[in-house]
Image 1 (cartoon, protein in one colour):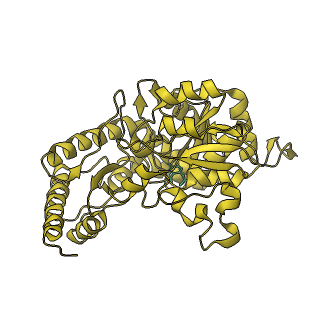
Image 2 (image 1 turned 90 degrees about the horizontal axis):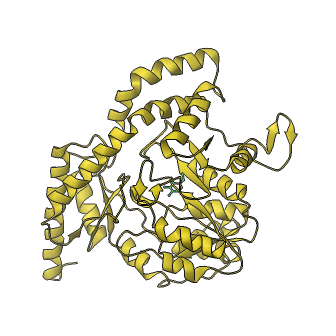
Image 3 (image 1 turned 90 degrees about the vertical axis):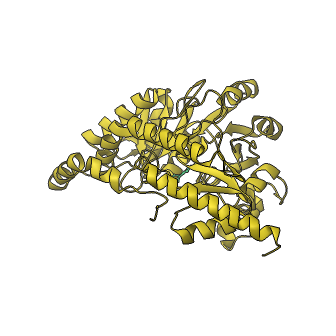
Length: 393
Ligand SMILES: Cc1ncc(COP(=O)(O)O)c(C=O)c1O
């Protein structure tokens, strides 16, 4: 048996009968940009998250940037973000000329640590970007009052949390504004790149629309310098069809997570991911922790199990943010990062980065596939531990 890290074919098969005729229609009428499917999806996704406005954009990175710009984050402002996230969260901050200020994560869930956020606040801090990582919801019960106390804006990065909720509500509807990504592998994935910005505030929604359409609300009237970042109709057709199935698919992911936890409960040296009290996670990723992760990873790959690492390098140690990357002038570096980050500065994220391993997780994964993954993992971990005992390297 081989188990891929992610298998989207079953998703595509479920929606093909709806999507292909709609695509043919778009092709025949050349209705690629805007139109009923885009408007319809924006309404349906806003309702799904429970916000008043959804503005479709070209991808999740643009969505974070547009959300930050729409709430007034400007050149030189500081924006606090967790160091354990995909680099897009930081890129969006840097692209505005604002300063990403990294903070550590908690050791249990690897989510932004509210105490670290509090310590990182300065007079230049403008916003906090909690990232709802791996399908969890960040600790918004602590972040919301903290932001209120300090007069800071919350911009949620909800790229990995479509449908997730917590004791204070659904991820993506908990900040002033939220950004999401519909990259194909996300819980709600397009057939290419797509993203969206979510908010209850009509003025913010309008600003995102304008910024994403060349700074324009009326054709050829450009009130500000914007960009071109559109959700196109081709993607909206797919997203509407998948959104109708998202709850069912998230339930399937939850069942798969329960199954993994049972299968791995008695495997020594494998730490399964806990669920934060009050959270309903949607298991975008299933991240275990093991010793000797790189050896476990390569042996699992050899055994036919697709695995990943999310993420191998905490952002403060990436070339982009140490200034030691090969991108030279393009690198954010110390200048625009504004801080000189060191190894050892974010010990929780750094220790986790050496141990985390993402197992295959997708709605249509079968019990047999999960048993195979768990058996392989148990064997590999035992083998690696034995080699350690006899000092084999
Ligand atoms: C946490 C997070 N933020 C932002 C992004 C950026 O989204 P995109 O790849 O659609 O630009 C992603 C996904 O790739 C992500 O996982």
